[in-house]
Amino acid sequence: MNSFIYKFAILISILTFILCIFGGISIFTGIFRSVIVFIGILFTFFIAAQIINLVLVINNRKPKMEDE
View: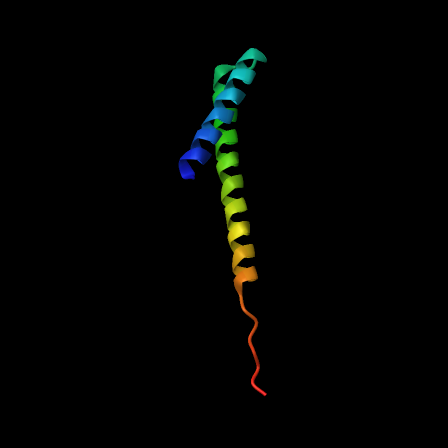
């Protein structure tokens, strides 16, 4: 799963770099933007995984049965 996330992030970063170059933006700025996009995608997947994990933990909790 992690390799898919990294491949996806790299693919989008390369696409961002190419679009920056074709848009007339300098190479340094294009690389900087690509790095920011890469980090942003990894951060988004990390936050999404944490939220899914939290929801699964909350849903799997069993309510306490009180003895009568």
